[in-house]
Length: 523
Image (cartoon, rainbow, N blue to C red):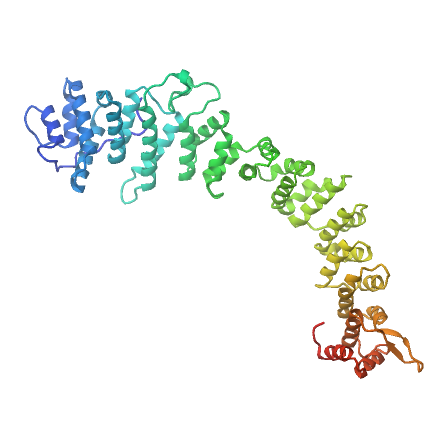
């Protein structure tokens, strides 16, 4: 069976190798009288000779000597040129006889390897075709198509030859012929030739050339029916993970890789990869390229039900990458009665940039489970429509884990509606002591008169006998409140006497607090 790409060189070469070299010996054996012949001309003589098989061994030996010799660069190039012309021009059945003429497997392999390396692309393909016919081997349809494409690209005329296709094609032919020229091994020993005909294969087995077709397609970023068939052969033979590994080695911009992933990616395959312990995230990442948002349902189900923290974190990150588009698919999960489901879905909405709506926030901010409330708070603080509501709820709540993020968010902006909530909460006995200073500082920067009453609570300690306000015992909270009052409301009737008393005090801490407030220093 011929190779899928065949052409013929012209007779343009006129220079000849030395008169006493292997080429001239071959010419002398073929011609009755000495002659100076190019490879094409000598091939015509051999083709027209009725005793063609008589020259098979001589041609084999001459080719091996020409292509395997360590000649000077110019002579080596001429050897390759004449040998290429000869191989291209010889009739196919003669080339088959040439390959069968040498009984020594080692010498046969030496010739083929040298020919693939040094002959022109058309000649190398032609010789490889002869090897296939001589030893009853064949390529699968997928491999034949791939070879045809590479050969055409490699034989592209100057000035734009494809050096990459040339190298890949030669590598492919070397690998294939190396297997063809292996000694035959009994099938009972478990050996199966890489290039045997598909109809002779056992069910479920794959041929190595299918793997090579996919590999070459990815490296060349070329897709076609041959590659699709090779991928199908591999997946049907249980080699899906092999295809995934190959695709994982190329960037996502590789068009062949994208097409292959779309062919092999299934929701069941993704679920299988994620159910492993540990999850096969490398395979899952590749499959997700082909599934996209269609995999969201499977991923959501697994994120909800998985007991593996690693799997949940992985799925959360991949689902969040879909952005707000994931919201409609996961919205129904917010009605789930299980607290951990709610927490995970809220975390997903936060990570995906899906803002909270007031109705959902109201329900979740008052949920019985503290972990749900905290996640809902973080979500609400990031959503403009419910930020004030979330902040007020967190400050009014007695849970320190909710108060901390609320106060941190208030440092950026403390809404006026939250000021009375914070002022009232600050004066309650169960307000966590570690949050008093931050709360006082926030109220001091609010500019609201509502904050004055709460701040005075820390600065004033009743009145003296003359009815003048008396400063409270000095504490960090007292100094922070004094500084805040002196900066924000120095002329307020209840604040002014306290500021003057602090300025006249012998306590350097009090005078420094008032002075820094007047200078506008940092708290």
